[in-house]
Image (cartoon, rainbow, N blue to C red; front, top):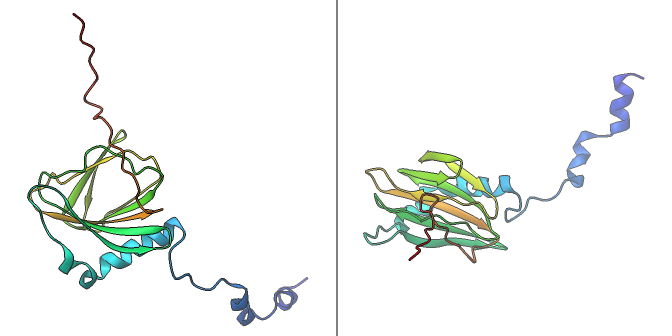
Length: 164
């Protein structure tokens, strides 16, 4: 058997597109959600005018929703953090748009500078903090949409029993 026969068996390569799925309007895979976050991050005009900074708490704004997902824009002044938490049944993509955020997990600490991205599964426990000297802005994509954010005690705070 030679390669010419193999090519003839395969058929006309230009006829293959009818076998491919049409492009999806909304993301459905981890890679597509990460890509959505990167495309929003790259389009500064889409989000920069919405950013606000609040001296008392992290500021957040729901930027977009789609079938089964939502996109949030957050701002962080120096010293602001999320507290140790998970996202319930939601998976997520965290993308730093400006500044630097630090993520703390049981596995260690990771600094995420602008353009840095973190993908996580349901039940993933972390704490995100702006421990830099400059404000930071981040984008968060949750699938399914975020319905809960259980807080967790810090691993450094052990429960004590007081006896009399």
